[in-house]
Image (cartoon, rainbow, N blue to C red; front, side, top):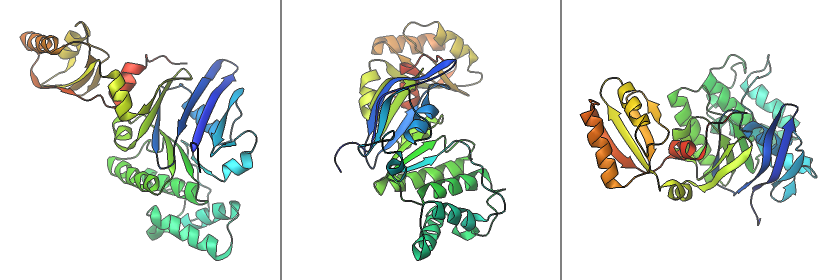
Length: 312
């Protein structure tokens, strides 16, 4: 099919005390994993719910393979798999019974339904736990079941709202591998997450929004070029990083800091001599620097340099 898989066009949505989405537009293609990034309250979930036909905008529209979610919601639902940020499985059902219930809801019948349930359970690594109750699963197993339910009707577009939230590191790695397999099979995936390093590893493109507006969008490489006028600098110190933080916050050209223990990343607007002077003064001030290097801007850098941290 020609045209984008998903097109969000001039979308706006208000609630009594806040305008959640403001004239938002972006598009994504088949086989693409697009990260949907923004501060809390930026309008990500509202946009995803509208795209999934669960909410209605005040203006604008969303198109799935050229079909309007407002004009043809039933047809669009057949092409969408929506995974919300909350998973509440029904009690008194085991894993296969739970999947079978939703397969029936999607109109699957007979041998096709049974084969689909087992195939999806196998793909998500659930077949060996088929008779376990759907309630009481670990967070990782629950998210696998949530994804399996989302895949039953073979949707072209997956809309995943914070799917890795609360998962342990191994579960996140395994979940990421599943999503890459799905994208390789041609499915488009729109995914929101606050785990930016992991999102950056799997995404082909990203859409950053703040206060309901699109701030920047495109492939990671394209956005890296657009923000590369500020060098991304990564450093590691010995001991407490607070001294380095205090120093950097007063230095001209240093942007917003991202601190993770003894590691600090920040954008720096300056040439190589200015960067060398910064390092020399850090050491002279008593900061014990053990690593200091320019890096390519990653998704965290893009987020910090393109948003202002404004909440709504």
